[in-house]
Image (cartoon, rainbow, N blue to C red; front, side, top):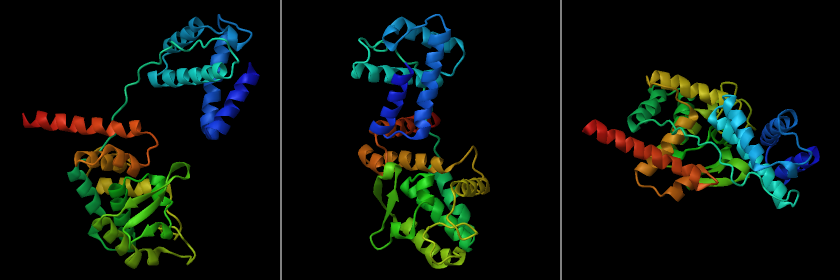
Length: 295
């Protein structure tokens, strides 16, 4: 049985290019299922002995252990994927997970900022014109106007920005680059930073990173988080404001203004449009709240 499990994990990495962390998560969940089979009331000698009743009992066992519904859903998904693999490769005669349903997980809607709060946040670093404040103005403006992920922003190099064509090249997940348009305000913020900010931060003339910290090195993810946290406090915004809050706000505001769902998907770099569709629920909730306040 261990042999088939190892083959499945190798399959995930080779066929789907799953990362080591993702594969390790599958291994952990499936090892737990094996422990249930070995030490529970359902000892089996091979995977073909596992029935739908056993899998159903495993789901009930996890629920009784007070696992969060999201954790149960993930573990069930791992078991289903494994048996789908076994059945597809003719390693079992019947798939015991075909009629097993995963627990319903209520998705929390992404936290977004209102247009008014976005304006407050973007204005916060504009109170001064130091190199650091010019950098921060360009950072925050770019994050909101493009919807980029925090890693994508800090990974930008000088050659990724084309101010003549008003675009930047974003190196997204899985090395899938996408071209993002720069609006007038973002272009101006970047120009101000390059002309009057970056040259005073850079220490090594060969440094290619666009956004630099006080040591003249590439800004880190943690550094960017701290910058946003500081300006959110300065703008007196309530709640936890993160780089992803700006990404969520970008998506929701784009859809509110009438942008096409497929276009927002492209700008965000989502592989599946279902990931982008969550923002239609955000706009629907906002409209509902606006109507309630107006009543």
